[in-house]
Image (cartoon, rainbow, N blue to C red):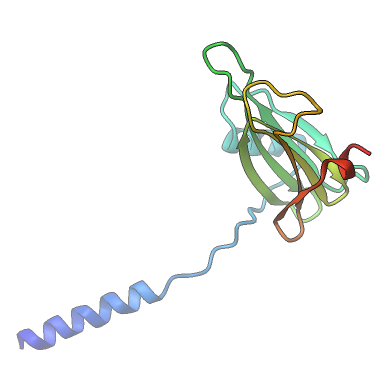
Length: 148
């Protein structure tokens, strides 16, 4: 009898552990002004100053927060979300240290990362990446492509 109880418990636990549903990273949202503020409240801190930047055809919105550096914290951080207002989903969400992000094309972001203490535009410690929003790929590109 004890063996049957243990076997039943193992089978029951196995059933529940294998019965996990696959989750989608995209989160449905409404993008009206009232609901956009809800998305901001959920994904950013109350004290964050959120910039909303649309791409060229206004089909996507970049919600961006940049931390301000100071002597106590010389590392800057960015946190951002890309929203598709048509499908009402978060397309991409990420954050980086010592970086800048902006629109590169309709479906791509340009990520600039600074590796060093004090960098200039001509520094070799700056790397550029294209974030392809449709495939979530991050591809390093040469600076001459970005700054011809």
